[in-house]
Length: 501
Ligand SMILES: [Zn+2]
Image (cartoon, rainbow, N blue to C red; front, top):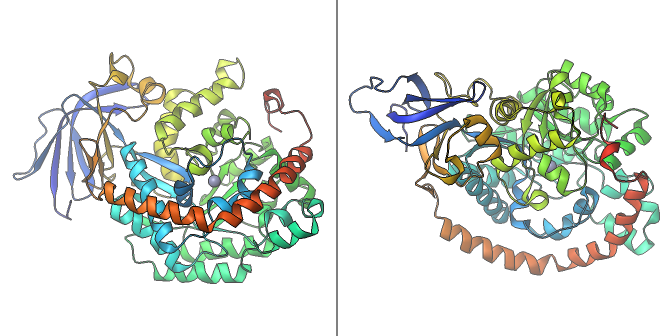
């Protein structure tokens, strides 16, 4: 545990400089929770400093997950062939019946997975239905605080059901199904705003560790007055905004149908865009959307694994960077991309860019990906002055990779190997705010065996209480699964994506 005055000297490691593709020997002095000095081996440390032996290790800034969902962790492995719209249809089954204790367990499980895989901070969008409560939000925040991981927690809110959000979908349901989905209505937006405001006012956690943000989940799932109220609330409390924008082609088309303009243009009209705004995904943004986001200094959380898994396509990271959009990298939830492995997310970000076509000038480089997964994600979280780099003044969020692991034998190029070779297997220690949260591959802060036992009990109980939700999903899936791809009516082919929608 690192107290305010604790002094730690990390000796013998090699410090990654991702931009330079170098990893030179360096010692790192940590006082309290921050790095105060980085210097040549043999760096002078105050008497009484605790030494951490980093010989044979590569030190890199903690990876920052720009987009994931705490509630998804209890639902990992529940689906295979589902689109985004089918995933949303499955909500009452895979995320239903949750207690605050379940929310806490699900968040804690994800935090444990992330720290073990070299991730030190996350932008988390938990779901609580029909509206977030201060207690449910606190349960998620408490989980991160106990694991010792940083998070920005942005509860997802909406005031329309999926069936109301997609024009024509309600009409193709049978009257019985229409009645059933009417029970899935989120709370009136005023309730969500009041609850979020109460959570923001009552927040007790150190905001450097766990802070709140506001997430109108998908623009057309929210009325205009709701989005305006979310933007006002974020402004009132100086917190960030996050929304899934143009994730699927269906969303992009529905945006044009509903508003006569893109979802991004609509959000711009509502005053939602700004440096505090993060678009999740942005697969179906056009050039004007990218320009708007770049001009506003906004961020995109790029989640290539989820986009592949849900059939949403290949987001164009090069176009984002060209338009000066800040790009962070995320995994998305375990209910739609299965693991929370930021090394895999980095590798996929590189591969998806390369998979768009053979023009290598348009491919993102490994250093661009490594910078996005650290500095870019930090900026999306609003923490770019404190996170994402190993330099004096930054928080001591440091991952120690074992260079004796096969991933690093031989060591040819540290940046290329970080992005393309490392898979989390070499993660040995993880320091967050000067505290070793993972030491010798074990989480030091929580008892993982107890967590596993509690999660299994929750899984068993939830499987029972969500049986009606599963039955409803099975009745809805054939209709939603036919209607939505029909809406997107062009053949699913990679070439459709090249050059934007
Ligand atoms: Zn998401």
